Length: 187
Image (cartoon, rainbow, N blue to C red):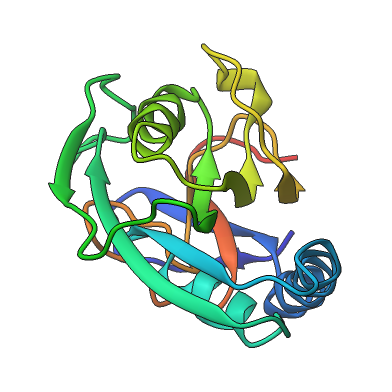
């Protein structure tokens, strides 16, 4: 892994997934989703804010008709740990009843936010609901949620970049890295 300098005193970031690795996997996911939804129109439901970059690249690889909707949820605030309490910060603008919904998420770790979201969406009576997550962190799982498509399974690391943030910063990085204490030896 390559170390990158970031402006956090005493910290450095190690590149976990390169831009090339991310883009290659997104192309594969787009092809699989297109095949699975052949002949159907889907609602890509972006979970704000983290999934924006992933969703933008993913939808370019999906060949079936797509409608884009957004929903804002928060369970982190300014922390690096999920609080487990989910707040809807922005709701859907259009009904999803009888639509095929594909939730686009940046990362699923505890599963608490996703469980809340799926329960909320199913109450709106869509034709189907599936989930695509760029990252899955099974070591943090507290509840089981069904992920239909996963980009990468990662260890229990705090990651930033490519939509993932630290206190709303670093989303714009083209790669995904994890922040480490600069005084701690890394693998």
